[in-house]
Length: 415
Ligand code: PMP
Image 1: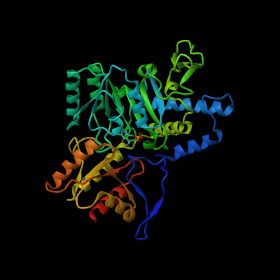
Image 2: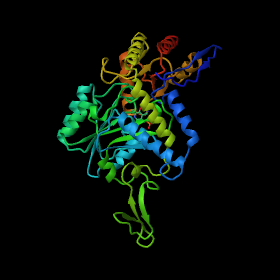
Image 3: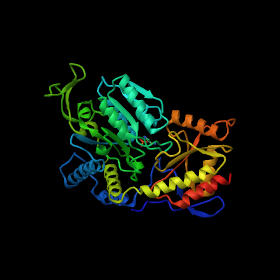
Image 4: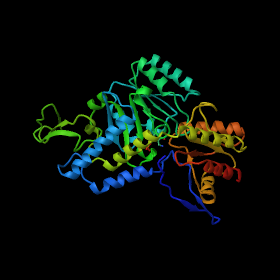
């Protein structure tokens, strides 16, 4: 697999140096060398996209549109699908929320990351299910009770790493005339996300979780709602024609009758990409897609690392894993846990300073789910213990080794 750019060794409090064990990959993944090289190659040709006729602009425009095609291939895009570059997953889901037809209601589960919970208006929140089968049954009941336009669901939880039954949920949604959007922020770095195979109508993910730098994400899927919606951002690039006299053929008039202007919005992805686009972000993201498509996601090795960590945690009497679906659910490289007897913030500091390990503590932008799972995990450990205010999350990917996992387990043992 292509090399991951790493910060190298870090110095510990006792003076030793160790290679940094980045176990916070779910928040932001390190960059692949091939991605960095691709960006470096393009830098001398830095120029405007879709806004000039010179050689630089031509090349940059070509690279940008090729990046869009790469992403469409990576996602198994179908006829009638579009790929829109956004800033990240949050941006992508907010864009989609604005494009849902006005008469459509949306269904989500309350287990979602806030990015897939807060943007939706006119939403029904279903209670987090206790198994993938229960998720499918709950959706079936909800759609029988009431007609909805869209179901929006995570593909893999950023709290538990559990993989959700997206294909089965898509089948239920479609049978009831609803579309389905998939928050693939946490699945895309770990497994193929294919619109066709999943039967998903929309998918959103972030480049910075997929071994590319910050600043570029994707919303991909059915073009019709997006083409019909008001532009997500109004401005240059999103407008095909603007006229100070209000008279734009096929357009709309904005402002008052005296000082108004007429505008005809662009069609296609440009409609939602107003402003100078993030060319380097899109090209980097596409390079990461190419690398993962060519070399695979290392799923087997990652499953073994997850099993190693979970088995080790199960032997620690003061640590309990957070889980929604039960012990045998399929998982990506994310394991969160409750720790009794040590403040999570202090634990994270100790892991960093004494062991060269980076983890995440908190409620992971999924407050309802994490609070509930923390309480349940604490009760499994010790019914009378106070529930910690934060959970601890270890998450990993292409650069993670068995030695990193063992170091974490050893550090947790030595409290
Ligand atoms: N959904 C999930 C499942 C996530 O884990 C995250 C990031 N933590 C997001 C959405 C939001 O991603 P971003 O911050 O890149 O917009």
